[in-house]
Image (cartoon, rainbow, N blue to C red; front, top):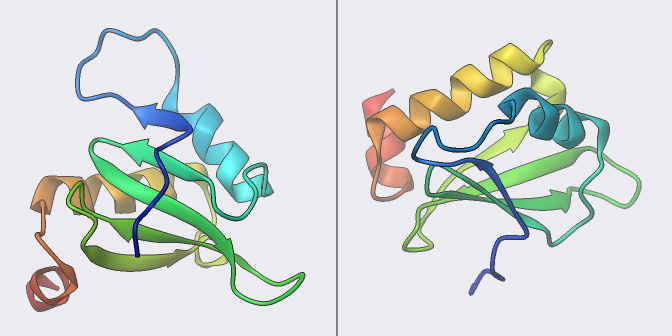
Length: 105
């Protein structure tokens, strides 16, 4: 699967942009991004899709090299902070693919 170019950057690697990550994460939780939209978060590519017609929105997480890492069901989180912490955990581990990520947990 070749991912489309990201439409938005959630969190740049540097601290040079004056916005809060929580706004983008709130949009994700509220379903503001349609299927097929790719968001960049610290080099991870978050691919938006709906699991079933009118169903739960999930984000497939890929590395910058487009290796699949994880599928994130946003209904599994109670707060924006929890989503942010989970994504930060993936960023901090910096897995090359799903096998490395799953093996670390």
